[in-house]
Image (cartoon, rainbow, N blue to C red; front, side, top):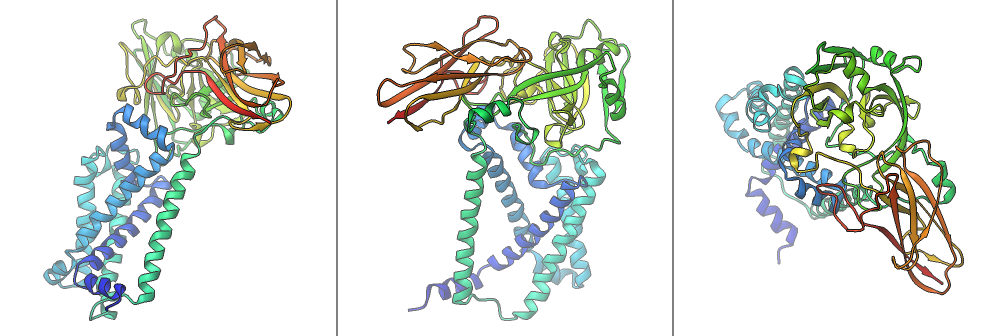
Length: 515
């Protein structure tokens, strides 16, 4: 009986799979080069453009479901799918190599044909279909860098394709077959890569979970979240690396005197000696945060008051919404009264240091009381408009009001923990810009409640740390529940709701086993 690997090898020799694989590998080489150029800010990466195209069009409810199920893994899965598409397409195109070779003859002409036609297809067909514009005119890279990166990637594609069909084919004039060892190595390699891919997706998905502090000491130590641990949510595959030298922030729209600031000018307006300087400790929370989730952090923000910039430009009384546009094309908007609140900031410093790229360098919006999707990063334009404006997420069905819901989170002990003796429950409570007036804890699943001890806070704009100590009267299982009341007397909503479209609600709870 013929061995399985020899049967597979003979089958492969009679099909175009090897030629397809050569084209896909050549396409992957070109993609790798364009990825590096995109990382350096010198071009576009097609899978990124494709994923953004899908993200802009997928309904918010479906997107929320994917985020809840996979966390950041949803983005990785989308990117992997896009990469596969852009491996399949050059693989299919590579099947035409022999015909083109017979038609043109000369090796250099064949390479030039594949380089130019590939770049042309991308720049005048694929990019426009993905809303990138002809020659990438609608991408953040612009037409020149977009064209440059795709031409370089296409040259690499053509060169690798030529290498396989000319040089490698010359070594195997009778075709290529798989030995038993090659078959086994290839099979095991494919399985290992699949396992690693699944593991990578699972690891990324775990980034979204419960808010947990290992100890009471850690909780108080991290009352102000270290920048490196501050939660990050972004629509991008690669966040924009903004050059501070060429960056400009414009104030325009319904204003008497449009203004433009470069980075040094904005830093000067943000100096503590300037009367418009802003310095606030503010907690941010993502609208997609689950009850008890970890997409919430607290930091010190310094910059210039948004109201001062608008008033300096002569804000028109007819303007009732303020729109923020960012370097990555993201948009968000807030009502006029929110923008004129003294607590709204154009921030340039986070925790006493310049903003990092992940958190919006060189400038971002901080608007206390609203969910994180309104705190626009990589800010490039502030525009006053008449009438309600719906930003990126709002066009997908998320709320345009965005007031943060009151929430109390149990951060320690962890859910399911076995305890003996006295229990030390710790956590945070937050209500946007309304402050917290009361935190209560129940140790019997919500039948009875007792007040927790609240730690003093610098303002109503931050979360409140709370503690509650309790000695169980018996062994067994206990459901611990927490709830809060905001500074205006409004109680936390006990009704459970998912994040989409208005933010999650419901009491946070854990189960403890007492020995």
